Length: 71
Image: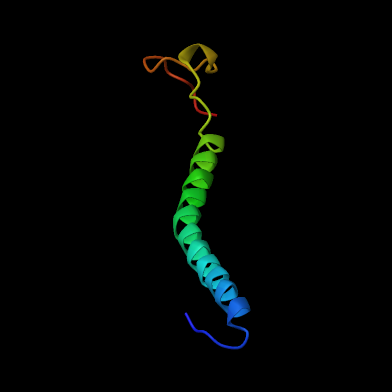
């Protein structure tokens, strides 16, 4: 730390600026991936494929052993 004219104002200001830069860098490095992972999980939950229809819900189809005349 320096001593001299105006140093009583510059030292705390410098500490605040450097501390803010370091803190913002750390928060950016840790929070950005977390946000992307959270958004990916939400996207997966919202885009789940529709459940498959059961056999009871399917329309009637001819049995494989039945012959269907050609149209």
